[in-house]
Length: 285
Length: 321
Image (cartoon, rainbow over all chains, first blue to last red):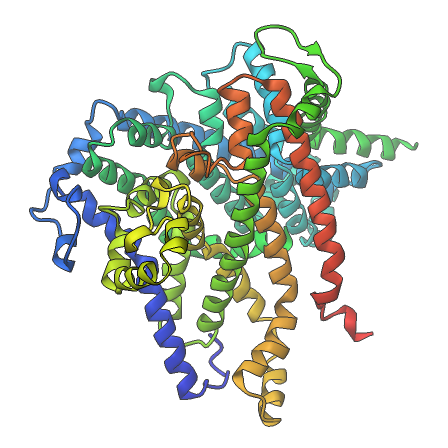
């Protein structure tokens, strides 16, 4: 990392390397298992492995992938479309609402601003289980169960944690920039859009990425609200595949791989944002 | 209020409108409603019928409620410290700055971003006692022979632990091992903590290590007396978040057991029981009472952890005065 830093003594580096190799091998086992099973015939998966060679697919069954995506109990393309729709709306809702609210809490001075901010922070203590049931009852009464409204609408109403994150970021933007824009006759909305948003791209990217991951991963929300199989998300679809078709482990592992790979690819493209985001969310949360 | 003040108030409120609606509609109203439902018999189909404190009284005699608290406590007591230990150890190793550090960090981090349902489905098969990867691995490193020796030396104990005759753990198929299986899964996903610890380790002043080395302190002493005190706020934060997370632990337990919390309720964790009460049995009032007890546990737990933290958490900045 720091080039000028001193070298660690040799024995330390040997121990560290040894430990890292050992642990990373252990951490990799589940992935190797997943990929190798996803290429196996069911008969081989259900046979007890006795030697290391039993872990290699014999024969390699690439058909597991097209078969899984065309499997009657797993409408992959439908689930993928549904998931992407929810993810897209979630990212839009979260980034839009949280950045507007964070602007109102950091760049405009108004009475009650701090009170609102502390109330918002306070709500982070409340476990979702407390509000989950009455919110469900309201959506049920409005006839919105089995639609995406209960999953997407709340994301347009600000998320306490992301608001907090963006507020901290916005505070760090020099006041001169917004004051100059005000003198030029810009309204607050124009300042938010033309000055703050362009300067906050890294923070907004973190919020967008994490809300995308949250929506892609979410299981509890879809489990509560969705019952029509055609409306399932990938999470819900994969879990129901797993519980109903235990006799098709090869296809199941292929489907699991297909659901995981996009996230890993996303990670490699956004590594910086990811690591910064985890550090930020972990350190300041 | 001057005109400027009023204009700013209106502007501020308009920008914050989304969160004001959210706080009222998704927080304030649901909290009041939840508190009211918790005092009612409510099945959604018929209007709530007021009971008073009956739900709470009933919970005190509900065996499954206590069972779920016990399961959650066992999970928290094992998974949280074990996760911190592994993450801290790996962060220390990564911090030695060997070649390929970014590569190793990526490998440790990726499990934590695998979609929860995908990793749960994968682990159902890894933990399969006959054809799964974990028992195959244990078999390869000779654990079967060690367990065989153990079973013949202490047959009574082995029987109690579900290892009679030296067989390997049954994991999700055995009530004695199901929680252990889920705990192992959770340790696999400690990547986020590793990244946080690694960031923390960068903040430890290098001069202190150099000074300690000059004074002849061993590597262990340097970790014990420099690294750990400096890292204590990070360790504390991870501990607190881990404990809160354990009480809300849901998805993997639900997916790995098809929502049953089996075998024999050994994985009925608190939030799983709450979910099933609300959405399988439609006992909404009872579930709301459980949710408020969960909130109370989290608040009391947080206060206790914070109070005791003063003794072992060291905040560099404050001590300098």
